Amino acid sequence: MSIVIGVLKSPDPAERRVALVPDVAKKFRQLGADIVIQRGATDGANCKESDFADAKWVDSADDILSSADCVLSVDTLDEAAIGKLKSGAVLLGMLQPYASAARVKQLQEKQVTSFAMELLPRISRAQSMDILSSQAACSGYQCVLIAASHCPKFFPMLTYAAGTIRPARVLVIGAGVAGLQAVATAKRLGAMVFAYDVRPETREQIESLGAKFVDTGVSAAGTGGYARELTEDEKRQQAEKLGKAIADADVLITTAAIPGKRAPQIVSAEMVAGMKQGAVVVDMAAESGGNVAGTVAGQNVQVGPALIIGPTHLPSRMAVHASEMFSKNIFNFIGGMIKDGQMTLDWQDEVLAGACLTHAGEVRHAMVKQVLGL
Image (cartoon, rainbow, N blue to C red; front, side, top):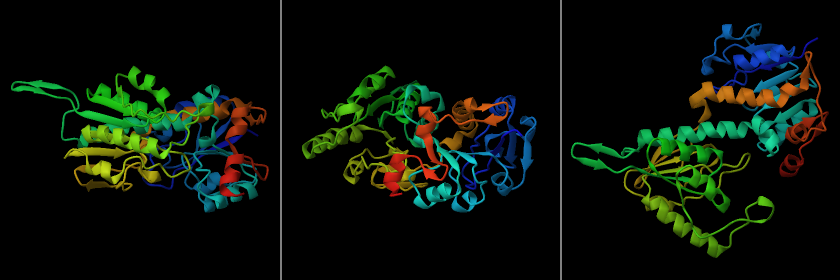
């Protein structure tokens, strides 16, 4: 029998992405896999049932959980759903591995082989599978559009009959994938863009996109490519220089999020109080606690002179392309394991092994075991 790949609809009404799009479903079918999709799973991504040739459609998530050999999901399953998975099934998606010890133990007890894509090793060979990066690019792009729509100023320089309007000043904090996408998007919209990251090696990337690097005079470069802890004097110097840059900004976008952990608070209440009247703040990390004092997830809050926006479900706001990217990442990860309709897991593959959360009744990821005390 061929492997059955099941695609779930997210129980979250704000989640519009789907883990499998028609073009990628076709590739799985060419490998001999059968596809089962829960009705409604593809609606938010603007995919019709007729777009999925040869797929079977079912009304209930239970029908997929009880029959699929491999379950694809854009978000984590709750304990009730995990309890309905087939013993020995493969679960693949964004599983929030550090969020719940109870969920991980349940996956372990159910003998589920689970791959949390957040755990994917950060190596060059895994880049085409990196869901965190692809979805972060969507988030960074969306943050700029949200900021531009709320900013009381033009982003680009504008010449009109009575003179010239200066472009808005945009400051992006964090130069990961999301931050660099935000920098690039703000530049395309014509803003004056500044960016800051605690890692000095990001300066070249920021400047290559046409932005100016905010130099606080503090380097957190440590050994092995990791940032080191700053001294108290360095923290004060960093806060002073960064505070000046924030005070000059018309728009502030913060992008520092850590999977499975609370987002670091970078912008203090004092920094917010010192911003321009009418300044706009978009905190990409709102769902995990926020980088900015005063952020409320899912709300726009006026804090002193600034409007602080805490958007949620950012990739879902562009569900068509976000789903396409997510689905291709999934296929690049698991497609090579399927041949003639059968799946074979190669545990010598460091990417496969590195992303594994549970397998054969064991919690396989050492860091998850340590953090959750399992």
